[in-house]
Length: 382
Image (tube, rainbow, N blue to C red; front, side):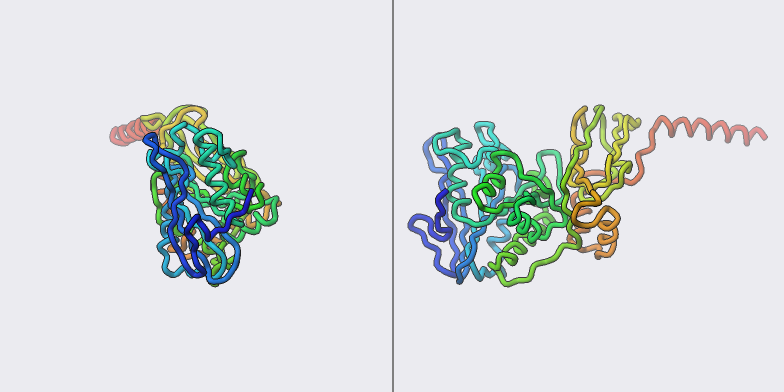
């Protein structure tokens, strides 16, 4: 892959210390009109690495768009070295339709590095890969959970690659999930091309959630600090755990959920995660954690069918880097209530009722009432 200069876009050359917005044509409309995506280019006064920060690769994942927009508007962000490419929306066609996918029903994040003579998705991927990834040395791609789910912000990276692992740890996320990523994904193919790239998964679709945006912006600035592109000190996370294995807990029966955990919570093996009930409230099944884990994400839609995902768990193992469940809980307990970590725990659980105890089964309650009535009648007789 040829390396293009990150500060040169056709006739436009961004001078040292300058910033400008350029347009990258990624496709055409049915009427033949060019479809461009905006790219904001900021250049430091001194030479240095080039970093891309991209969002809305899935067109309905808008938390990243909010974070990139905030970075563009941040007057306190003074780039000392290198070049920063900020792309608020990669999948313009999906974004315009409020959809994860392209009009040809393909997932753009399974089509990299793309091909100039391939499908619509493949052609778009090829342009993005050449013009954005090809200009940079490192990358951060911002995502959310899929529809009807939410994620506690976590970085995902291939920790077997030292330069990728270094970038992931520098971001300052409290949770890092190890893995290469799917075939054809932007971050996996960028890493294969020698451009260490990580992703952040945080929040849910169709929203710009303030605490998730704050988390993403802080992480990008930490990366910039790590790369020497800005002279601000990095913000250290209260803890950092590296998850090597994840597992999904799924429903065996249809019903209506009552949650006992929220995104970011820690659980012990055997702890209740959620209770599945009938529409009248009778208990159908209680979901329990098979392992000590941190809750990476949960479903947000309470009505479920057999096989539906309930919780995505990051397995906490003794051999992993970082604290275990008790250590995480202890460090969280030392944080003030207004710390970003604690605000996220509350904010991401606002779309669901979360209680420690399972709901009271109405049939059990009715039986208890009958016994109480009989006892009261006996007392009145005496």
